[in-house]
Length: 152
Image (cartoon, rainbow, N blue to C red):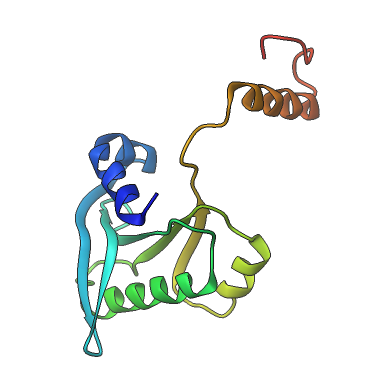
């Protein structure tokens, strides 16, 4: 799936996506063009959070996490902090969504960055019912809940 198709799918289901993000998110822009040092960049999705009083920039990647993704997002967050914040705003937050993340690589890539950046992974499809059942059995078993039998 291309990043554009992922973005289109999210925006086709914008109401559901906003509800999943949580209370206070307002959609502001798609492919927001920013000019940084004579070069154009495009922030995939821009939201404003009414409660937190800050912009939330979302970058979508159709591959596994790479440290250069964070560099791109950090540049956009820095731009918003310098050029888009208004009186009373908190610093912007960046969210990078990718297909896989290597926690150790993310930890090192975030080291020393002062902007609020977060990395998470997404799935293009739900796991098969048998995989979900096995996962629930394992988790419930670890918690000592239920009998681990059928119908979990």
